[in-house]
Image (cartoon, rainbow, N blue to C red; front, side, top):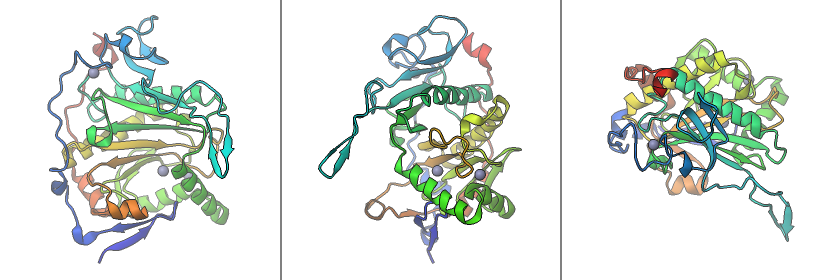
Length: 350
Ligand SMILES: [Zn+2]
Ligand SMILES: [Zn+2]
Ligand SMILES: [Zn+2]
């Protein structure tokens, strides 16, 4: 019998279609195997030496003092084709019953490594933590801008997941409103908090750790599990075990630990599902609410194994063909891929 499950945070229902249960091997024909990429691509605007092909950088981790030259290991630039423009006033207005404002925001690209052929599953641990540190620095800079209400950091991996350039990169979009998915989470978490005086994610983590059946992996301060009402097969959440509203509150040491858990999860997904396309997003507290008792930051990883069709588009109810309990089991059993980049920063630059 299929099961309807309700997300306790957003109240959304999902269908866990156990009768159509899919194993990892059922998905591997859907994943688009990307041919072996070279370490450097002469046509790629994000490869080192091509700094003039991007807008001028807003942040770079590099050895020297000069900007826009090829001695960086993480580089952040404005998106050449931004979804929202950085200059200008919002000019909020109405047209009869319709509300509108100017498309003001920030849209940046975090170029995660000089090497064209790596990804979060194959970065060195140091490189992964530097990428997270770049996210943090950009977040802290942009939140000073009072026009911005939310800053979303996300990654599209593979063409199917929306990546138009293959060089490893993630993106940041600062918006002048709180996105509706975050509003829904916030409202659900506030309802729960009013009733129980506790953070819903803290309670969820405690219950998941107790039950263990949906846990994929934990480290000392972080945990990764498949949510009870997963919308997608192998949807995975990564969270700090103790309450923290904003991911920018992580210390350098914690960020290194989180980078390790992230890589462990991406390696398991790569091994288990044959390097599928995926998206991830960091849901952190809205700007100005970084000390919230109600919101608990989390990273959501969404492998793109199925396509939302008429029912999902028509109702918002997702049909998930792999139960989160089964997905957690497959990911726990997946052994880590050993071939990560062994280099540290110094060797990368040599
Ligand atoms: Zn490249
Ligand atoms: Zn919490
Ligand atoms: Zn979320």
